[in-house]
Amino acid sequence: MRFFRSFLTAVAATWLLAVAPALAAPAAPTPSTRIDPTYWFVGMKNPKLQLLVNAPGIASSQVSLATYPGVTLDGFQKLESPNYLIVNLTVTPQAQPGKLKLQFKGAKSLTYSYELRPRNQDPARTQGLTQADFIYFLMPDRFSNGDLKNDVVKSTRVNHIARDSMYARHGGDLKGIENHFAYIKQLGATAIWPTPIVENDMPKASYHGYAVTDCYKIDPRYGTNQEYVQFVKNAHGQGLKVIQDIVLNHWGSYHHLFLDKPAADWFHAFPTFTRSNYNAFALNDPYASKRDYQLFNDGWFDTSMPDVNQGNPLVATYLIQNFLWWVESTGLDGYRIDTYPYSEPKFLMAWGKAIADEYPKLAMFGEAWEGTEAEQAFFAQNILPPVNGFKSNLPGVLDFQICFGISDALKGDNGDLSKLYHALQGDWLYTDATRNVPFLDNHDMSRFYSVIGEDFAKYKMGIAWLLTLRGTPQLYYGTEVLMKNFSDPDGKVREDFPGGWAGDKTNYFATRPGQAGEAFDYVSKLANYRKSHPVLSSGKLMQFIPQDGVYTYFRYNEGGECVMIIANNTKEVKKVDGTRYAERTDGFSSGVEVVSGAAIANLKTLTVPAHTAWVVELRK
Image 1 (cartoon, rainbow, N blue to C red):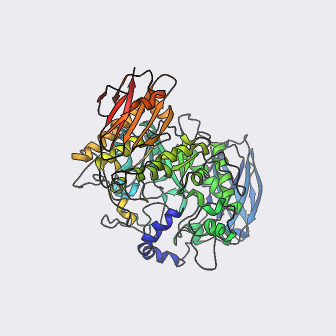
Image 2: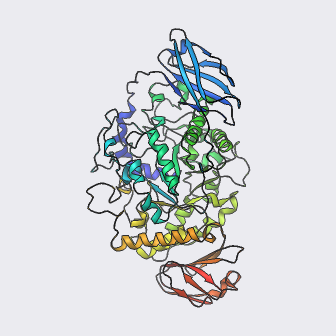
Image 3: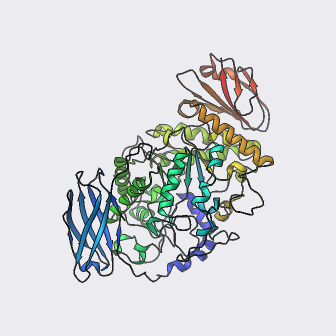
């Protein structure tokens, strides 16, 4: 992720000032008895269950299991810390739901009732994603405040809100998202992807969610675990899927397992603080040094984000079980995996297989912020041979190549279309590139509307490409109403959605005047057309090499449907010889531009206005 290097450099001074206190070792809390996973399920395909028991002095105890049909105690293991024990169980298919009696005897003696729950049999749960979906990506803290009662949680390290500070909590929550399901559906989206909603109880700048402090708990400022279960259920009831944003590579420095480490080797550490080199090329460079490889994988992502040692099998199992637990507990539809390349490669293979074995319908796509088609494809299922023992089993990735291609094309008066064309040409590297997720911008990048110089004609071109290319498109919240800014620092592209708080002067949930309304309507019309015309999602794609600033491709199917996307990327009107596209247009005599409704009477000669993309349904 060499692109992160420039981003981090740009904000280093501000960020280090914000998180420097986290580098000092805070006092570890006095633990009460806790077992992770907090409960488990009968009927899992993998019968093995690893329990991490945390209680003062528990390591000196002997463990026994009261007789429970179908469950056996395989043994227990001490760790470096006196406050932890690993307990290994086998939960056979014959086991029934109920409560196990675990007995701990020694200097620390106690009996713990551990719950086994039934697996959910509802076939409507965990639907996964297809190309027919359209993902709306948002930051819960910055989207809408639906529950004022959780704005201040006294037990948290940041127990106030301050909307005038880009690094403070602003009060958005799960209820706020749910209050606007209708808005998201009106836009045409079918899936919601919030940034991480698990606890981030950090003293500074943790509103984004990527510094986890408890893997089994929803952040109380967003809601409770039960409220999240209901949130997923209510979303499904509204025809909306839920993607959970997760982090495998690192936790927050106030994570309870970092404050009181089970063992030193649960985290990567160097003699002095060492960042990752943010350069994934070391993973597949045939000439790479071991030092570069180690720095990329083992270096910390940032000062307040300890790098988790997934090479430790106990840690690997802890992580795998945690993400199985969330799917079974909630019925969520997919995982977006943050900083995917930074995790230990063999762990990624094991994690991906374990999740897919239990939940074959679950969607999974990872953030692989790389600079080339081949480097991006390396982190998804692909046709490439294994490299250094790594062969990705991740179905898809966030398609940064499409993002870069659209941005390059729309910068300046006559942008370069080659990057966008090559991004699609490189699809031969993937086992199935349709499982990738194209997008225009995100919470780490300058907003799309600013990148293209606030040019509304170019905005519509970008939206047209996003919603008609292959894959499952993703839109960052606010793009549909022309929210803008540059990521200098990133807080500027994470502003509150206007209308998400009582008293906001502008409320785009209710009314969208001027170009904000035009933008919303354009996205909505095209997204809803896409919904009702599967040719734009499941149809085949044929592209023509860009020529004279014009880029044209088609979506078509065996049923005879065909949609032409033709874009003039120059500042002059272009008269295009349509006979070049005869292999797709033969048999059709005219067309209709699906957003404006304008008739296209002649397919042999097309006059396309400057900086315009047409989405044309061909007619016979």
